[in-house]
Image (cartoon, rainbow, N blue to C red; front, side, top):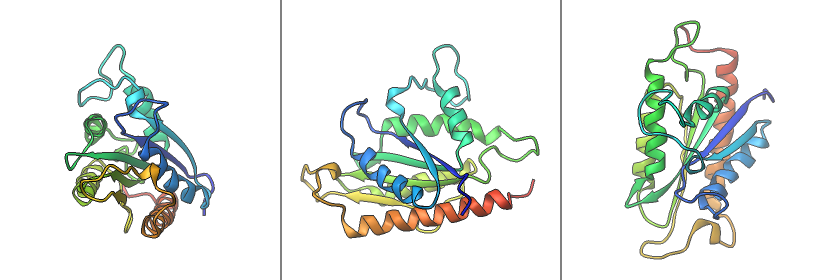
Length: 202
């Protein structure tokens, strides 16, 4: 596997640093599996950045998105992490998706969408139902803007309904979650390596 592959994890938790985040824990599990395959990674919490509302790549003075956008464009793999609130992805996740909308009209030097040849892994965590719905929304949205979604890429954990246990409070990682993270990371690294060698045509 090409060890030059890179990943960026955007955690769309509502909790600013340094508050504990289950998204950091579950997303970190995916990053650890990517690291086993030679992929180096960075991680950020979107809520720590001043991402202004809008659908352009730069919304003007004080907008932190242009810097974050550069990190997105530089990474081969996006690990997109969101908590579940009211059965939906977080408002922070929606803000990031809206800013990514600008990539629909952005192209590279060959006239291809800027996010072609890049791979995305949806990661969803929460102590309520909604993971399958959110995974479908993220796969469709990220695919629309140019990302390729690997086979069995979604990684999620849903806590028991009507309870308050968070993923980060579990004594150990459930086997099914660990297996999902391994599969998603393996398929994402494999696909990103293939696309690096043979990009989509212009």
